[in-house]
Image (tube, rainbow, N blue to C red):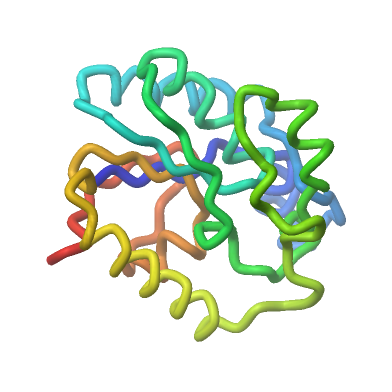
Length: 174
């Protein structure tokens, strides 16, 4: 499968400069983040994708858009692949707002408040990643699936720290 970390968000832009949480909830992509998303879509243009799994955060949904423009495949918004709750950026948007901003996706299965109230431990994130790994390993389409997710979740899944917009090929059964 392919793993794609979302493009640069406004949280990433400010936090990477100061190492201080700028207090931005569910941030959007910066202009650079949109460029990274477009570049990732180009790199994935020849991939034989049959399914795209996307975190419900705005930055992941925006990153997936250029890929969905090239690959007309089913997309699933999946709560388990969300970011580890640690900063203001990990407060999500209500599903009604997401549905109005991204009407081509189904958010009806999400709880009204789908993000964590407080911080999530690394162990909790690893448990989610392990559950996702087992799910994907059992699916026959895991080789042709793209996951659009986040730094901590992808690191918990693979042990690899991806930069914004970076893609990693990953075998969940290995």
